[in-house]
Image (cartoon, rainbow, N blue to C red; front, side):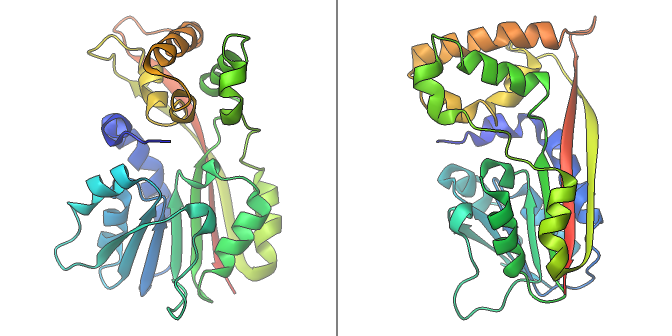
Length: 265
């Protein structure tokens, strides 16, 4: 699966806002080491370095294209390093101290088996440190329901079956239950943002442009160029009905996100 940094960054402001909201709830004053899991183009990683100027910060991602974009914009003193790794198997390097903060913005929903995943990541946090996670919880919204419904049509379901998966994000009470035994506090909440997306200059529906940078990616990776265009055309028809434009061409796009900040004993 190949990520397109330029497509993802078309909505950089909207994607940055929950990252800032998550960071504001991490109560540590001066962590020594910070890891950003799923760092993408590094925008949030650099924000972490600004928040904690005394910390060594590592941005981890499995996309070489995203890391290439990130690598050209590290902080001047070299406190940020970039690591190409699969988040499903990431662990602190042998012999290195556990990080004080493991932070992940809009990445862990791509992984399955959250009970095991969150237990493993929390165990990788230093005692007294924080696990801070934000994940889209948009899977029952029209944008994502339409994607699943389109992929299940007879025309597409055989080719796109590998990209279909159950909603990966669990309830807040479940994350509490998984983390609380090893935590001093678990702060968990849900926020729904109302994004007002501008009309695209290329005529593309704004919600389709948004999902091209994220949820559409694994589906399009399974199709050749002609089939991918036909699939997007089918999807766009459903999206246009679910998200009609305002008189000025803008589209209202409610987007739900889930947050967890747990402090380790």
